[in-house]
Image (cartoon, rainbow, N blue to C red; front, side):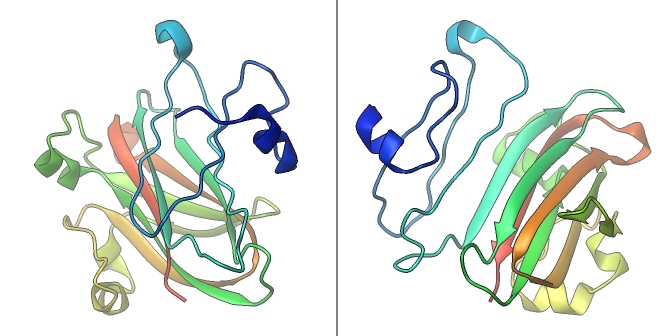
Length: 185
């Protein structure tokens, strides 16, 4: 998909560098996948951003990112804004998935994902190593319980604002992990 450079500029959130990619698209309800890769096979760290340009007419229900955590000091970080332009409280479920990825054909899955969530000031809000260790009934009732007990999840009600979720490998583990954020209400 190729996007019109003028349409990208009109959003007010155009990339700052000419080598960065951007797409403006009108999407109907459904699930979508964005694949980010380096031009010419390059590798490195990337920042992927998704903006809802018409928040009064739509709502992003969930977002996820999958990445490889290749060493004990590496982690996957996802920043997100709960509530967007709406002021109020938001109930979200955050999951860190690892072992159950093998059922989808992912090799080298993160064996023991650890999930942390931080507020806009960088203060740790929670740390979870196994979704069954706390809130298991509430998480199970959401119908979004992780398939494997070693996976992490929490449900939290937060004011509108900026947050970061971090996934690391428990016990210095490495592998492919999936970080998901669901807007429940």
